[in-house]
Structures are given as structure tokens and as C-alpha cells.
Image (tube, protein in one colour):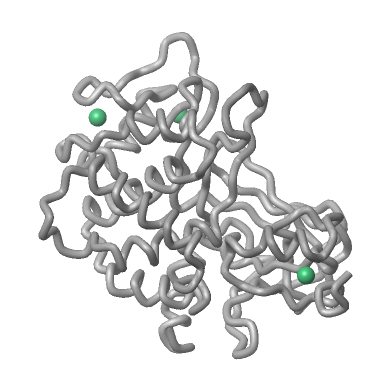
Length: 297
Ligand SMILES: [Zn+2]
Ligand SMILES: [Zn+2]
Ligand SMILES: [Zn+2]
């Protein structure tokens, strides 16, 4: 995606962000990056945004807003697979994506079950892909081509040569195809599209940790933000972190940040030694060249 295309996208993202202390910029060297537009004090809320897609496999959480379900929860009467905390969440979900899923008789339950029991993120990534795809279908987004462009920008060449990741995507694609019950010749939802979409999720989603981890996987939900997905990584110069309130993503500063500075997260545990950090970063499809990684420390 060229810079002009990026400008168009920027308008789209801006509409969703609830604080303008940041902007998304495009630098030739690093691609998209999130920049502070004013000086920010340590501990401040930098911005918050409603996620583009957030899904959970927890039976105790509302499928739309992720809040804990009250005793009087509401189940979708038709498919019996989605549960909501309120009529408002049910209506919003129906309008945004669930009408299509329900008509399509998507097997969401099997993916949730898989996400609950398996150690891989295929189940959650599958649910995310179906949610995003349903949103596109239902709202007649004229953006499919743009998404393809965006996705191709999001993943690096390396991803295709990363057999482990590719296998993961392929498995997830199979799961999605089965769950969505699409005809074989269905346009758009082909392997290359999904690999791009999954590349986006794998590299840009935030796992929301389980509040009380039991035997299951530690990640109870996964979320893709519009702005937070563009925050880059550094093992040593990270200056912000995010928190979730339902499906709202909140970004806080860890130190004073000057106007014009990039907002940076650390995607991995920064106290790990270089080799282990590099291994953990493989799933994001890039090689970190921060100061500590350059020094291999
Ligand atoms: Zn809800
Ligand atoms: Zn339903
Ligand atoms: Zn690094």
C-alpha cells in the first residue's frame, strides 16, 4: 500500500479513536507507526478505542462486550451459539455481524470449543476471521480490496517462508471453511485472503489474558484494534502498554513521552535473553533491530 492509500486509511482509522493525542504516520523506513501529537506524562491514558473485532471463547463472557454474563443472559434463539449480557449487545451484534453468521449457519461453537481446549490460537484466530468476514459481508464493506492491500502490507515476505506459521494459517483456514459452510467456489474467502487476514491477526492482535487461569489456555479473548494494531515493538525503548475494558482497548504511558515520539509496546517479555526474544518475535514476522537486539543482549 502506497502512502496515498495510507492517507485514505488514516481517515478511516481516525473515526474510531477517542483521543487525538496520537496519529498514525507512515515512514519509509518502518512503515506505519503511531506518533504522540503532544507531550504525554507517565501514567496517562494516551487513547482508547473500540476494537475492530474482539472474540472470546469463555462461556461466562458476553460474546459482544466481553463483560461477565449476568444470571439472566440472552442466547441467540436461532443458532443458540452466541450469548449476550443484554438486549443491547444482542441487537448490536445482530446488526454488525451476527445476522450473516446465523443465516450462514456458521459453526461457531466448534471453534470456541477448540479455543478452550487447544494450546494453539487457531480457534480464536478462526473466530476472529469469521467475525471480520461477517462484518464485511453484512455491512457491504466496499473495502475488501483495500483489506487485501492492507494485509499485504502487514505481513513480510518472511512469513511465507515461515513453515510453522504457514501451517498454522492453513489449519485455521480449514477450520474456518468448515465452520462457515461456504461453497467451494466462494469468492474472496480463499486461502491467500485468509493467510493475509490471519497474518494480520497473528501479528497485530492482542491476547486478553484469562482473569483466573484454570487448566485451559491463558488467553481468553483476542482483539484487533484500529490504532493499537499499528503500535510498533521495541525490546528496550517501549513506552506504553494496553489494558482492556470489555472490548475497549486503553493505551497508557509507562514514561514521559515527548511530542513526535513513537508510541512503542514490547510484544514479548523484555527480560528474556536475546535468543528467546528473537524466537518469540518470530510469530510477528519481523526481526527486531532495537538497540539491545543489535547488541545481541
Ligand atoms: Zn454485552
Ligand atoms: Zn445466532
Ligand atoms: Zn529488540
